[in-house]
Image (cartoon, rainbow, N blue to C red; front, side, top):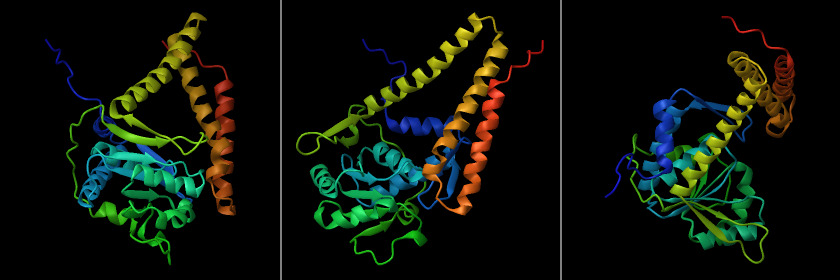
Length: 292
């Protein structure tokens, strides 16, 4: 006898569908390597990811094929992660801090069919391209007007052109949840790097666990304040203000690493620091009594 309640596989595509269905207007904000901020929401993210999945399928990417990335955490990297994984292929994220010879070895060992990269890593790609015969296309994750001029990389593809070639809408296949979705190679080990494959199931369970830990931490802190005599409304308001202040302080701390070192970028960084100071001061101020 089988229990068929909620009988569905744990697939990364379900995370994308859930976000687009229940939080379509929530923003995703990325700082691009070009220096500007990119903003869109989960609905737009899902639509672009579906187009990309269709484009990759038309480009010959099949179930089980490995598609590599050399990229920062940005919106395009997230799109290709979900498009490749959701369609049943394997996303292969590569550590760009490895030596080019090791990166080439990894690409060949994984037998990657495509490699997508941020322009930051163009020198690495130029150094390894001729040594990676399994890679049929090198996808520059940028707009058409940002494509590198005079590059000698064969089969260089613009990410936005590739995405635009795809049709709208994609029916995410219901594949075995134990099939591979992500491939990562070790670094700092004896001999050549070793590959580790993550399944759809393990990826979702890790995501659920991380979300539970984040929520549980807030619940424990709220219970501690309630035990100290605070009312629920006051304790919750204090916790929310402190969390907002922490986010501002974190943004101020990391702003210099992502904002280009130019006069035009100095103002946003200063504004972020000022906002963080104000938020910190508000968080330390006593909360107003809740109205009956």
